[in-house]
Amino acid sequence: MESQQIILALAALAQQTRLDVFRLLVQHEPEGLPAGEIARRLAVPQNTMSSHLGVLARAGLVRTERRSRSIIYRANLEAVQRLVTFLLHDCCGGRTEICAPLGAAVSACGATSPTANEIEETA
Image (tube, rainbow, N blue to C red; front, side, top):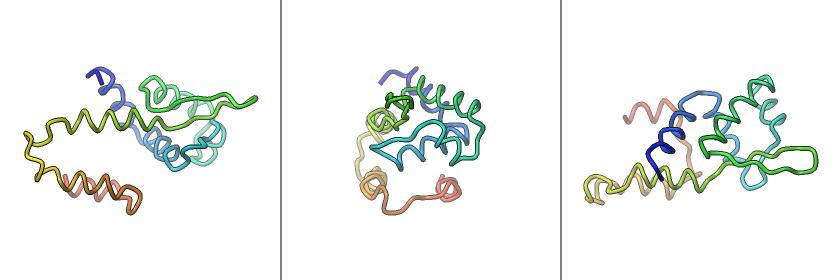
């Protein structure tokens, strides 16, 4: 994954509504959600949501699929995998024991979901 794509992805997720959208779409994999439903669930005006979805799509974090008259948005989990792999490449200078907690957290994905405050406290 190129550095510019990484920067676009991180910048796209560095905004509360877009982060909420991405997390919502991950929860609804693999079926996805139409834009109107995403806007309704997050209580965001549809025209504003359209802008946020555009940013996420340009960053490669969401995919679209036309189903009859609706456009369905889905999280691009492969892009997230590439992003995480890029960030953790040569983790801790190859000292895998230092990165073991990261691997365990990823392995337990979905078992518990840390809040933003919990993540901030460990940083």
